[in-house]
Image 1 (tube, rainbow, N blue to C red):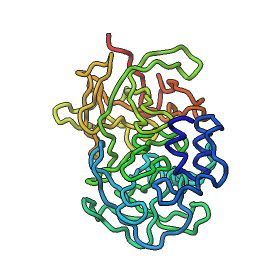
Image 2: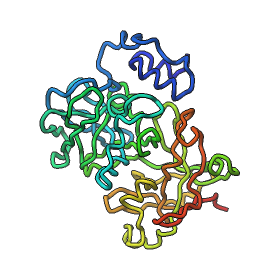
Image 3: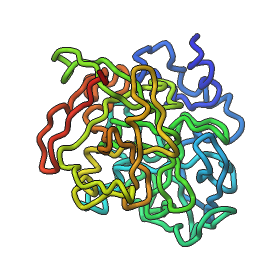
Image 4: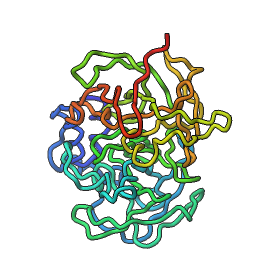
Length: 349
């Protein structure tokens, strides 16, 4: 039995074990129906949402390696980490449905109740210590399987979720997870309480060799480490890009100038590479070339030789799943878009 199966066998319900087996492509990890449920004797952060809430939810804060972040503040799931999904912003921008919904996916389990259980509330949510009550709110969800219309807690306008691979309070398995299973692809972040922004932790960079569009020649490019606590792709790295339109950075002010248009809709397809603190360079990466610039929302975007860095949604993958072939590849090199041309970064000479 693998370390992964030992870790989750005792806590995850049978469906979650089956989902894990699909991700790994190893059916031996699947548990017989009901076997895991029979040994789960206490609430777990991984629990599926199966019923409407009976009272107000409380949101609190906890200290982690990613800084102070939001957690469930009371009840059975007190201390469980809370996450936001960047592609949920598309709902406000375009009117599409929630990115983490009950839409079909390759794992065969609903995103909003099973994979990333929504934090639900009956009545106004309560602000615990360190939480800004003005940022707390709710949004109506009518897409949770088996439930009537319910209220999900939001913070800074972003819906909050748990993660099915977090078992106990303090776990952060979903931090910085670049997730192709959501529709559309997005990044899951822990949430800092000050403004409700992502809490990405310190960004780490390395060189990665991957094929162009899966079938092309291999190229070695600058990449950022993501999926820090994700068991199925731990410390996975993804190519980073610069945009030809990013020519207006005001270096003296350290802020984004008018020549940097990749915000709003652009940022949903080309997410900014974020960091908390100074980005760190791995072997073969020039530490002096890395810097940061403040985005309008107050987050810190990493720069390379003064140019902001981006990820590309089509590069997100999980081993064995069909999204983007289930393997690492470089899909955005030379992409000519309405927001500029995006290019990878070769190793420094």
